[in-house]
Every structure is written in C-alpha cells, then in structure tokens.
Length: 148
Figure 1 (cartoon, helix red, strand yellow):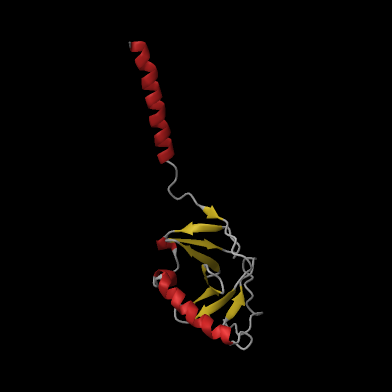
Figure 2 (cartoon, rainbow, N blue to C red; figure 1 turned 60 degrees about the horizontal axis):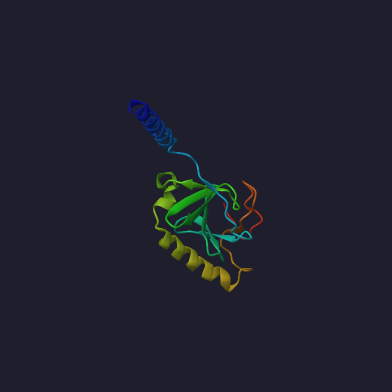
C-alpha cells in the first residue's frame, strides 16, 4: 500500500509545483494585439479634451503625446504607430486627458467636430492630419490647419 501512495504524492507535488510556477508569472506581462483598422483615418483635433480623434471609422482611436490609444470593450491599448501592434494599458497609465473623460464623452466631442469637418473638408480650418504608419511622422506640417 505504501508503494501506491508514493507516486500519488509525487504527482500531487508536481501539479502543485506547476500551479505555483504558473501563478508566479509576472503580472505585468505585456499583451500585444494586431488590429486591421484599414486605411489610416483623418485625425481631428478636439479642443475640449485637447487630443486628436480618428473620424470616419467605427473604432475609438485617439492620438495624444505621440501615441495612438485604442479603446475596445472596457480595455485601452496604445501604440506608437497607427497600424500597431497595440499593447494593453492599465487605466492608471493612461494620459490624464483620457482618464478625465468617459469614452462616451470623447465620442460626443469627436462626432461634433466631425460634423463640421464633413461639411467641407477642403475648407476645414481646424487642426488635423492623416494617421501615418511611421512613429513620429504624423503628418504635422502637411496637414491643412495644423498648428502646434
């Protein structure tokens, strides 16, 4: 009877050790996701929250501090380039402007500015640019109406 107990004890110990190792993984492990947003959208500057928002797209993408922030479900992601990959962001790590507004408010500001832009995008005089694929090259200087 003792001979049967030893393998069970060893197996139980091995599973317990595996569980401890699995739980001991770093809690801050980064998650990267690739998202196919399609062609880069126009990013309009929203004066009230003081950030850029993607327009003409069903995605909640914002640009602030040389980073793109994407909101999906209840999670935030960031990337230095529009096409990603995007890394999950904790709420505390978001720029203050994104923490100070609910996403529904940001959408409202975005939609209001987009209505103005759609009337005549060629004569629109607000700050805007087309989201680029290269970090640090966000069309500033090429975009009509862009002012730093």
